[in-house]
Length: 375
Image 1: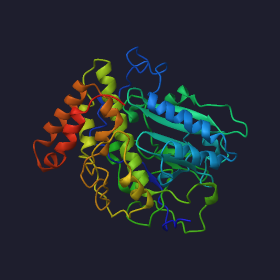
Image 2: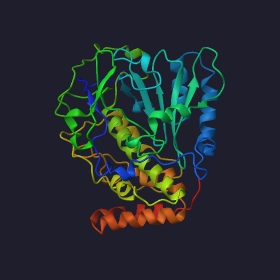
Image 3: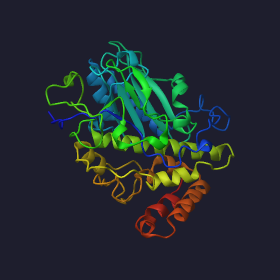
């Protein structure tokens, strides 16, 4: 069993805000407009086929955990990405508590959530056009075949925090002893700070200056049954990456929506700054490398024909060594029309102004800009 580092931090998620609080990037966009047609448009065919196969194969297993692990395997989601949430802020919130946390696993395009005893797995799929698409997979003893999209999730997952489009939402709350939210720790983005990071989340890490709300946890005395989960802990590096990805993917969706709807590109500056990690708050302490860090760095994303080293993690004072998000090579950007990719590449170059960072990543920018549309 992988050793859990001593100490669990209770923190709020999302402290890298920059100018994202700008009201023009938070107003809800009409996702059911015919040019987007969120409710009726089919999911990206590559992602759809992958999910269908994963669900079909998983149903051959008996236990929910076996099915979960098969789904993760087929969706190419590393089990090392496991993070645990104990706040009651999800569809199966009644089942979630500090003694029965909800597990989330993810890669660059999908996330799978599960709480022991729950009736279903929850899927969040990042479609290059639609943004986040939410679905459930029944896990009863004799489950209904297939998976089902869940529009009700949009009641929470279209908000100012998601930039007004269907997106990932990492709740940041103070809770009572049962995990019930008492108040948001993220009412004022300008007050977001490391010491209040990730409220309602478990984080396996050494007690440090990361959070003044740290709560002690020693191996073997966790307040939940670690055998119920594929891994015993909640990876701190995975949470940092998930936070970064959520912000960038939501902005990528907003940018695409603005293009499809013929609106002004209000999100462009926020997106460029997010891709270049310009508003990243310096780490107060070095984050130790974890099994997830190793799995993340060596992963090769679909469609990547050359490597630019953008997945290399720093973890001393920032997330990425290059200071650039690897999502600059994401399926979402590759699916943008050429004119939109060219516009985004131009905005990135303008922001960098020919500095040394631009010289280091120019090849990646050119690859993003000239890549033929597809996938």
